[in-house]
Image (cartoon, rainbow, N blue to C red):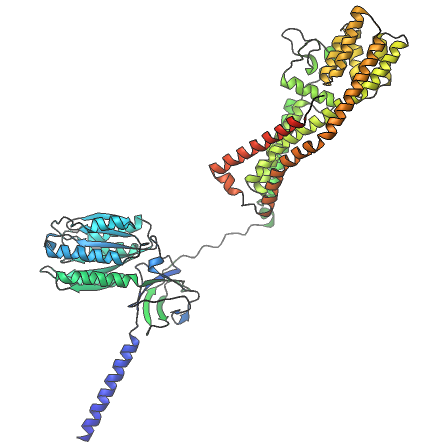
Length: 625
């Protein structure tokens, strides 16, 4: 008797120990893996479901694969996952067997479930009978959700469970959602589906979805199919014995899904390796486990050859820039060869360097010079450009300057585009502006020198007239003693007079070329002396005094306006220099101005405003005396 009692006590102790071990082994949370594993391998995604509220972080969650610790797992609440990461589809059976109280209880439960969802998560509703119907596509609009779930859908013959799962999976894929939860309610077996059970399971796996199936007992109730779909997808099956239990089940399921967390990490498993996942959460008992097989993959093929140093150098941006500059130089050379004017040995061409010819009707102006007898001094832009180069004594033709400027602008824009980006290429527009400024500076220097030399040369002219020379002879004396550019211009006047051109016409042409209105007074004196006579030397003395006084006033005005001219250049140069500085510090900072239409409009408007401001300041400080 005593031995029997001892044996009974031992049996009870062993049973208690086994029960305790079983209780310790059962975790206080659930670990489920969306079908397909969530993100593409090696990224792994799991869902943690807790029976109560949990505040997790990566420190409290410990993940191991085949006993090896996983580094840097991330956990976020499902409520914060967003509409593209985790969404829900309600699939409601609308077969004729659901008529009456079952469908009303089902819609009430659906409303309770929707109230539990996070506002950020999308919800879709699919009704199925003989064929699936999308009552509500994915949305976060609570008003639309309430409106759809507040109406009782129409009922029809059939129970297409598999077709409904395929349609829900298509919704998930078309919306670009990473994973989803399918809440499926049905009171019978599948009737009328064109898809098979295997097709439906594959569609659910491809959509990375879990099926939470709810079965309502009826005469045609098939719990096996619903439970199998839930188990294969990582979900759960619940059974309602009566319609009155549906609201409670829906509400409880919504509560559980709202307590879900998304676990992500990067797996180090090898191809085709069987992986056992174990998750421990601080504050919750037990260990949750899952298993998957790492997919097979083909490693990237190694390169057949490694590029040599010569090939790497040839493909480098520096080489590309140098080749671009070389190509631009060859293009410029070709343009210069095409635009190079042939030598013209005609007498008219050779004499045009020393005299001014009047153009006959319909004949081009000799040597590109404006007509000396044209009182308006009108000429084409190209002729004025060539004349400006001739006055500035630049040893290059107009065609070559244009060709080199265009080539230099395009070449600089290409180099800046490669080195600093598209925005920096706009700086290349400064090339033609710089060329124009250089020519204008040289031209203005020559004309300013002529104006400065004019009073002294007129004094010499008046002295020669008092010595008994004629006006033409006195001009020859001035030519012998004058400096450039006066010597060259007055030599043209003497040569024109020897060819029969009236002296006042030649002097007027020189005044136009040098933009010297003071010389027009000398032309007027010459005309009066030729027509009426008089003391030309004394008149020239008065003209010389007037010119000297005007020169003094002009120099005073230039001194007073030097600050305004300097301000013009500072204000005009500051924006492009600031752009260059920003591009040197952060090349991508101004990229939105080039990539977007509004940014390009802003750049153009800014450039126009800078140019307009510069021209306005120039007009203000350019006082004619």
